[in-house]
Amino acid sequence: MPQEVSFVTSAFQSEQFPPADRPEIAFAGRSNVGKSSLINKLVGRKNLAKISARPGRTRSINFFSVENFLYLADLPGYGYAAVSQKMRQSWKRLVEAYLTTRPNLKAVVLIIDIRRGPEGADIELLNWLRAYEIRTVIVLTKADKVSRGRAKQRVDLILQQFAEGGVDRPLIFSAKTGQGKSELWSRIQEAIEG
Ligand code: GDP
Image (cartoon, rainbow, N blue to C red):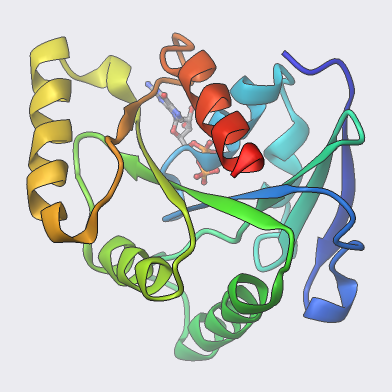
């Protein structure tokens, strides 16, 4: 587990991204999927990613520094029904600008609720990441809410669903029990090493 983790900045436009001077891993998922919980569990901090849940911060990309060798980029959650068309467009603009221009981006961790599987907006993002050839790690979270058998079924289903897309085996995760945490760090390490 990293010793030093700190909040760097909230970016509402690309000019506000920190200098691309180290590898970066981004985290994406629908609102409420458990993205903050996953980031907090990963770095062993209780409230680090909570900052993104503050009003006004939810539309920004929040950057965290891990021991001065890695950035984590917490992308704004999507798919929240009550969000206006205008908000959705600004989400798209910011996230697209990020994904298409960030030179140090090594992988996107796409977080999906293990009980729900990929839905419309997840699939859209997944196809998009594939088109831009951005390495994607699918993480199925809230695994503590289903049986082991059911979890494996969900993994197999996604592998089948995206067989042609060549997706890597989705990782089973739980922010509650810590399941999958070291495997996720391994995948991040692999992505950094290219
Ligand atoms: P975010 O909006 O994607 O950042 O989601 P949060 O991390 O705030 O989590 C949304 C809700 O799901 C909260 O009530 C969390 O406690 C809960 N949650 C997140 N991850 C897990 C998990 O792995 N297991 C369980 N049981 N609940 C989780």
